Image 1 (cartoon, helix red, strand yellow):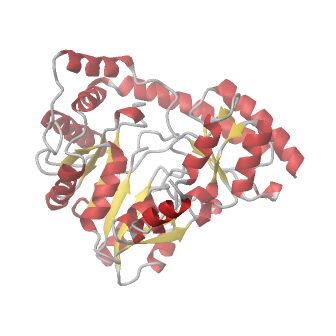
Image 2 (cartoon, helix red, strand yellow):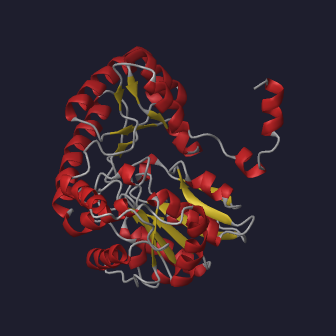
Length: 394
């Protein structure tokens, strides 16, 4: 195809698509794929295989001939198990018939939530830095993304006063992701209660992305929908990818008041119809018998976390202690490099892959994301290479 033809084809693209950048993470994954001997601290997924009994449940479902569509809402058996799980863990009660929707990963759940509630020009407030999909998802749904700065000095937890200061007449929702990707920050209950008060005071919805809810260390996770008077104005998002090492299975969920779930389902039925039945069967097994595996993986992540954070601080990359997810988010200020320069040079010179903080918003500049969902041996070797790199670039 000629340059002229490419330009002509590009003229057909929508303005919304033109507004969003390509993912800053994927560019580094593409570079990584072309190099040998690289230690990756970039990919945000468990390095554990899905536990065998979960895989076996999917295999058995195939052998039994479960290869059809399911309800648009998802398998009722899975929704019932999920309702029991959420009530037992957080004390939140959802009707599995009308208030739960099984989605193709939590990414689809987020997209559906934004498209279901936003009118053109509605504003969504979210901490900065934040997960790479939050801004593009808001724009693609016709909304306007309003970043709320966070700081390393306060553990990258969004401060309620900063959040309220950004609220304008077109504000429609607050989008929270905690434990946070990329920072590993965990919101404290008192701060969440204040945010809940702000949401009620300004008549806002809260989309609470809690995909990392089980990956917390030394603290308890507070489910936003469990806060007083918040179930009716919260869209709770979660899934199986992180806690059960099921990223490739693509199963997530949304829990919300019935009118919102119905609206999300209407989009889902035309865009995806349903999550794969084999994956839903695997998710059902995860809820029924996956707890021991979750606890084992979390304990291993915690060991890696402590090694990673201490190692980064020892080599001069100041890093606060993340209490959730499997990411460290150190400052790279001592090198004088931008986050993009740091990530590119580290990859080329020392063959260690990290993600530039700028990929997660302006507030991520001056930091890089290091994922510790890899072996301790690789973490220690990566730290040795990074120490050499930092010494050279001071």
